[in-house]
Image (tube, rainbow, N blue to C red; front, side, top):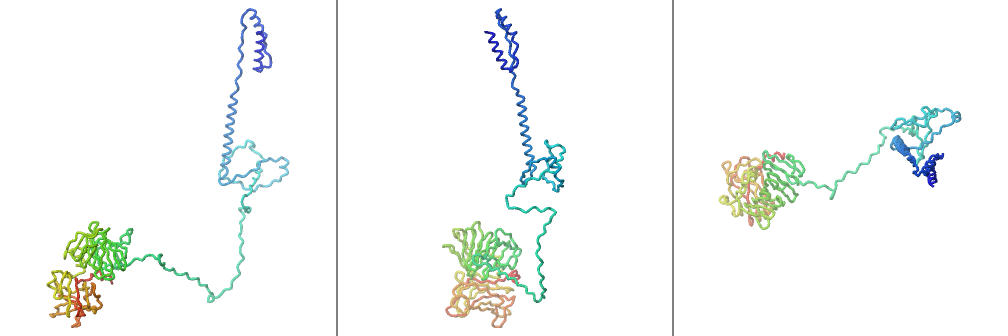
Length: 523
């Protein structure tokens, strides 16, 4: 029984190990039989270990596969790198090596094709399938197959050494010469002149408001047309335009076409047209002398606004407000009315803190400076003039007179000598005398009483107006002699041409002189 099992085991081992020759089991069999007879256990033989699978070859195969993949990737990268950008790779026919008989039958033809120039010349790579010297390779590679064009067919490429000559037109037939005097040159059509824009397309033209009458010595008047512009020095003779900003260190005077004037120091902005004038005070003050003007005047600072006409007004900057003073006529804001000699504070809520200044109102530096520059003598006809009025009735600063002779007469506070460029200016209202009036001055020159006068027709009736008369036009009608420089004036009077039912009212008058600066500008 044991022998059979051992036999079976050996058969299984043989099948497992794959042996071809059966093992010699005689010794084992005999030993087992002896052991069985003697009662000893049969000796057991350890079987040899089965050989492990050869995993080394598998690792080598994997390494070969990785190297092959890297080689293929590098070859593909080099091929892509050899093709310049913007070109499409073309298909290449397989390199078929002709047989010896085909080479013998093919005549030797020189290859005139230029070698293909590459943008990038990679280093040559050895071809494992081609020997170092292949005579067949010297014959040149076969010409690649050109792809079919997808767009319209283009003409064949002209060789570089061939120059295409464009077709030339046949020479024109000669034209017979024509004498110069018979040549008719066609006149080109004249372009239509540009028409000025009309309506809303026309740019707004700046409005001329007036002219600079006077600038104090070292006043340095400058101007600009907008807040973004640079300040420029004023040029005498330039007009004052609407929208201008004016700045001066010392007083300057602006005269409007109707004779109205305003004086300022500091900085102001002027706007307006033929019917109105708006002055914005930025710094310091402005003084208006606009008697008899038909314009509407406005002075403002921030929200403080004063509108007036036919008056004499001083407006000075006072913080965010204006301090306004009525020097002649009257002004009103709401229910508050200021007459000559009164001042008040002006804000967006109107006038407040009214105060009577009287003659002190003209002590303001700007007003006093302009009086000294333009005025030789000014008579306000206040209470101090009552004793000097010899014709007419003085009441509330106005003298009212009538009569067959002089309707108004007053002695001057002091004698005034006539000067070059001198003038007389007065605010007057005539009622019932449509024919006109005469104004005159009395003098005791040449040891005799002399009377120099001028005659004025078409003086407005029933309304206050300003008369301004140059002294040079005054004449002594009795001796037919005109006035001259240096004559000392002592009395002033007015005579109405209509003697009955007429009267004259005089608010003030002044004797002045135009500055030399203004005369130079007009030349």
